[in-house]
Picture 1 (cartoon, one colour):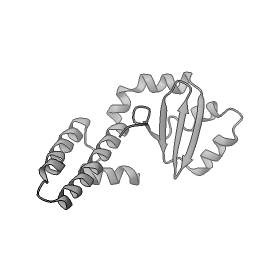
Picture 2: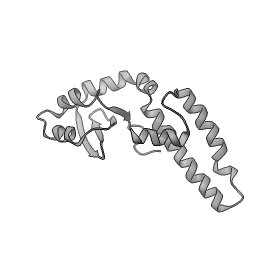
Picture 3: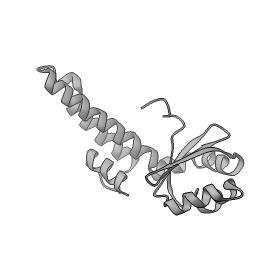
Length: 149
């Protein structure tokens, strides 16, 4: 997926990086690009702020889609997709955002428009999503970052 590849390129990691590897690389690069180190000029400080913002966003994104994160949150995710119903959903550029009745939100990546249209037209969207979306596409929780990052 292009988005994941783009974030990996920003941090300079490959698909085999563990969460521990991501954290080490992130900390090392942030020490190098922290805006406080660029006090000589406003231009260099602004450049460092922009670079560090990209690094932070990439790190948080990669952590949120990492298999270790999914493994650690599997119980909560399973409870949500099994017990909660869909309150709302939206689709944009192959990203399906689903808001559940228990307050959790997830984004699903690489969802074809045809699947989205079938979800919209399904008699029971919850059942359709359980069968065709939840365990078939890369996902991440956006519940904790809705107002944040």
